[in-house]
Image (cartoon, rainbow, N blue to C red; front, side, top):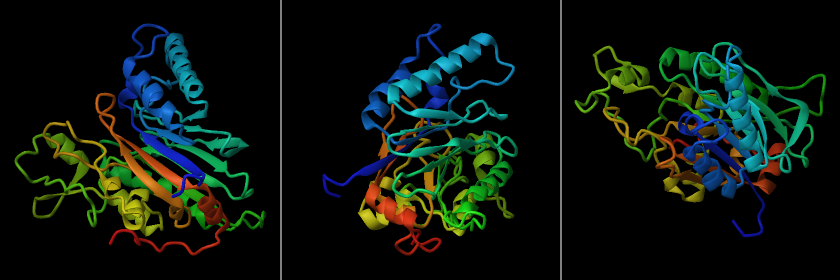
Length: 334
C-alpha cells in the first residue's frame, strides 16, 4: 500500500462494561476516557462497532438520572470522535451494541438504522451506509454481541444475522438500479473460529485446567462420548453463506499472520486461555478491499482487544460496482 492510497478504517471494540459507571455525575470513568481519547480518537475510525455500551443506553423503565447519564455519555462519544452514533435498543442482556459512522466518508439515508428486538439476547445495531461514488448500492452493516450463555440462542441469532447477508444477492425488482448490496458484520461472537489455519491454539475443554464448568457449558458442546468441543457454529454459518473474515484475508493475501491473534480470554481463570472471538465478516466482493488488519492491545483498558480493518477506498468502490469476481465460500480457510 502506498502513502497516497486512501483508506477506510473499520474498528470493532468491546470496551468492558463501557468503561464502568460515572465516577460522579458528569465525570466519565478513566477507562472510558482512555479508550475514546487515547485509542479511538487518534485512530480516527470511519466505522466503529461497540459491543458493551452498558452505561450508554438504558431500558424504558430506567430512572431519569440513568437516562440522562446514558445520553450524556453517548453524546460525549460522538463529540470526542466527531462521528454520528446509533444505539440498538436493550434486550435481555445488559451490554447493548452501538455503531458510530463518519459522515464525511459514508452517506446515510433519512432512516439508516433498522431495529431488531426479537430473538437476540442483545440486539445488533444495524445501520445501512453508502459511498457517494457508488450511489444506490447499500452497505449493510451491523455491530453484534452474541449471547454469552446459550449455544442454541447463538444459533438462532446467527440465522437472524443471515437475513442481512441475504440482501447481498437480493434482486430489487422494483428498483433495477439497486441490484445488489454489500454486507459487513462485526461483533463479539462468544464462539470460536473454525480451527483450520488459526494461529491461536484450540481450547482443550477436556483438560483438568478447565475449572469454570459453567463457562464450558456456554462455549462448548458435549459430544456423545462425553468429551467437549468448541462451538464454531456462527463461523461455519457465515462461511457457508459466502461471508469472509478479514483477518483470514490479511493472512492469505497481505502476509499478516498477526491478524489472527487472540482478542479475548487472556486473563480469565479456568476458561482455557486466549481466543479469537471478536471477529468481522464481509461479503465476497468487499473483503477483497482489505489492505491491513490489526489486533489492538487494550490491556489495562478492557478484557478484549480491539480489531482494526483498513480498506482501500479505490478497491472498495470497485467491489461495490462488482468489477471483479467474488471469492467462493470457505476460500480463506485452507
